[in-house]
Image 1 (cartoon, helix red, strand yellow):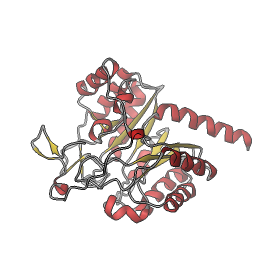
Image 2: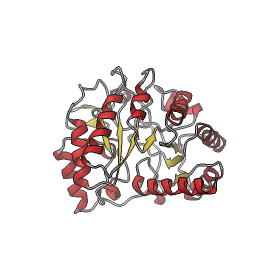
Image 3: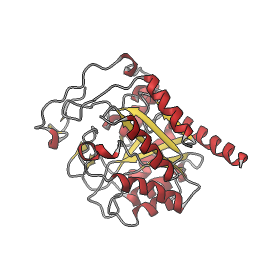
Length: 318
């Protein structure tokens, strides 16, 4: 379990959670355990990320798959700094007042992408409610820089919701990422305790707007389970996403980053994830990733190839 203090800055990583009571989640089941990272490529990935002064969601959000992904030189870059203006109850990314944007960050992301030899790169970010465009132009500059340095690399963006940022979504869509991802994270009834700064139907509408503006862009969204949702609520989220034309859904187990975060209400059995996958495919998603360790960017490159193949097969049947 991760500590709540930022040991480098010697200050609370989550000041808004510091005085909350501890919320233990119990012992993790065997199916949620992962192997510790080994040497070799993991160390090389670490070196490249550090040399370019970049942040990754792998580190900042305490992703359980970091050992597996970095061992094959796959990293998910987190732009717009390392400090989020939101305070979601599930997330381990540092919260507070962010610093100014680094104008060189897009180029550094592109350089690291090229050095890692990524065929498919995922770029996400913190929420930046303090910026007039929510960081949209920074996403655009990053996409352009990657395309310039690595023209053969496909680009997936995992964006914030751009709540009350008129024109921001349109900027990012105009840059034509190959995949536009925005996570709903949980069911509507849990937004207040889990994702209080966001609005469920705004997020659904955001994904729908991407398809309205450019139907060629793949859209993707993900939810966590184990936060207290019901099975029927998960089905309703699936229906809402399909109504918005979303192509790809990811479903993974919520894991509590610290004792100050939202507790795990339930560890969902692997068989239930398989059942949810079957239901999602039946509802019409082109691609579904559903397992305890599924995360938005886990196996993103392989999943993109399958997603593209699924669309081709669908068009051939029409």
